[in-house]
Image (cartoon, rainbow, N blue to C red; front, side, top):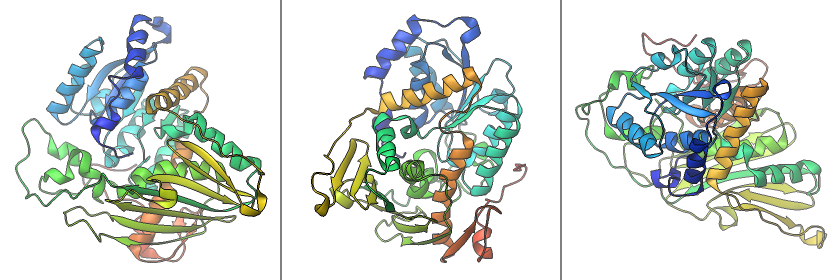
Length: 428
């Protein structure tokens, strides 16, 4: 989820205390999980902290194309009392190491697929940030390779491990709110601002920019396309639809089951921001699933979404409506069903949910079972979000053939299913 860096940092909170406690309780050598971190940006702070909150985990190597990011990560790990890991700038040097058990992928979206696929083929387990990939084609291959090689792989949408999200899902699935025929997901984010129109400029010292681009098209360096803001450019990501959308749509699909949409239509564009970003600042997508309709919507520079909430998932049932967001869940009975059910809430903290998601992954590694958000689930969730963008970019109502993995009615839309790769990188 795209948030300001300060909202991702828990060093002063309870998770830092857990990390210190974990350091004091070292695991036996046979139980250790040795982590190779690929990508040292903002999301890596929360993810590495969540791993280090468990005593069996240690970061043995880190990788980034930016020397300044490597240095900050080394300093942060030292401040936590951890051993100094080796540092490299090419992910392949992480994948090739015999002392790495898990590859933790915290790169920009366009660099999820290749390291994850290489890690699975090298016999590593993988924890990969969301969305699973930049395209549906990448995600499908990632899921296939993970399954083929018997690897334990988890996508890092930690809400799947949140207690109050599970409660909300169970309430929907129980039938207590009646037949659900519409689900609405939204993100109205007033903290996303205009990033301006800076000129292209020389590559900063210490940055391997060609490696940062990797399979993406060759373009001059522009600070707005780099680091955090990469998510607003089609070369590297899918905007808010695949950023916050993957979190929220994830909860919707968790509750409603493994269906794929039959068709998708979308509308939106850049109506407010005047910067050089590319992805829409306003977007609505409507998905026709076999048994219900799903609506996604986002806007920037406003925080009053449906039910006056910044974000949420709303399940409209015949007996009641359930709304869930990061603060908890609430059930509101239909007016003619008074007294049917009371309103309830469940609070949670970011650090507890993220640590629980990592715990689920670590337990799966130990038992060699599937975690609660393996790459098959991650592909399903991410692909549904991608379909919303494909409908928007192709300016058409697309009909999805899930069995074939193709759009039935639009060749232009099919061309967007997999991003072309820049040589010498190849998706295979």
